[in-house]
Amino acid sequence: MSEIEDTFLIQNKCGLHARAATILAQLAQQFNATITLYQGDKEAPGDSVLALLMLESSHGKQIRVRCQGPDAEPALHAIGELIAQKFHEDE
Image (cartoon, rainbow, N blue to C red):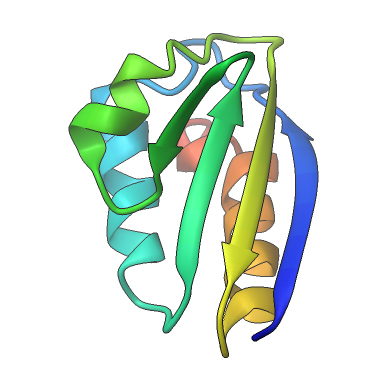
C-alpha cells in the first residue's frame, strides 16, 4: 500500500475553520485513500469535519498530512493545493 506525507502551512486568515474543514473533508472523500492530518499531538481523519475542527489549526500553523492507499499521491497533491490556495477564501 502506498503511503506519502508532507507538511503544509495554514495561510488563510481564519485557519481550518468550519467552511475550510468542510471543503477539505469533501475533497478527502473523493479519493481511495486513508487521509490523516496532524497538528501537534492531535490527529484527525481527513473526512471528518468535526475531527478537523478539533485540530485547532489556525493561521501560521504547520499541519502534517499523511495519505495511504491507491490514491495517496493525488490526494496529497490535491490537499496541498487546497491549503496553498487558502481554501479559496481570497476569491
